[in-house]
Length: 205
Image 1: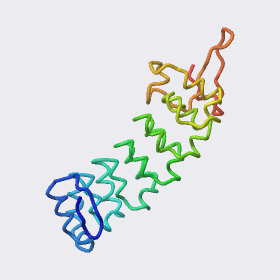
Image 2 (image 1 turned 60 degrees about the horizontal axis):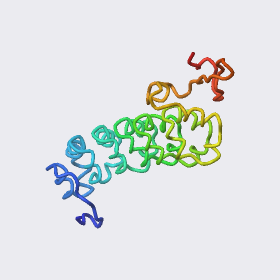
Image 3 (image 1 turned 90 degrees about the horizontal axis):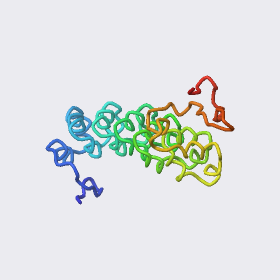
Image 4 (image 1 turned 90 degrees about the vertical axis):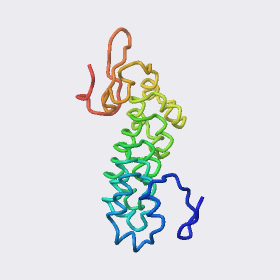
């Protein structure tokens, strides 16, 4: 643990460029933008020492292309940008944890994270986890999502029907199914669509 610029920081990366950033003041960092860019390209974790450049979109994108979790060091404004968070999540599902509250309840952001790892559900907004229709889409990716939902969603028969599919089932393999599709179930010897409240033309036959 070291104290730099009045803030205690834990050093993980030992690359020469990262160590160099630690010794530079904010005004120096802005003037030596190319040094910062090289450092974050080498180690996304170096973004923590980027000073005012943590609000620089190009620098931040370079960092999260190395490690999506580096988004935690970006400015609040960039952590609220959907396109930036989507890039971070595509690199590391844990990036969802550092997205704005608005984006953590955005299904377009949440589903890609869940496709990578079901534990991303821990970072999903409680408001979205309480949305039965949204959780139907999530359970279509991985039924284990249901265990992290509130009782009102767990007791929804349409959601529980999706979560009951075995993980070996192709509809439960991450990325194998567009979760917006209407799944089919067998009742009384015939098939009928499981109503998800989404367009019928998305059904898988």
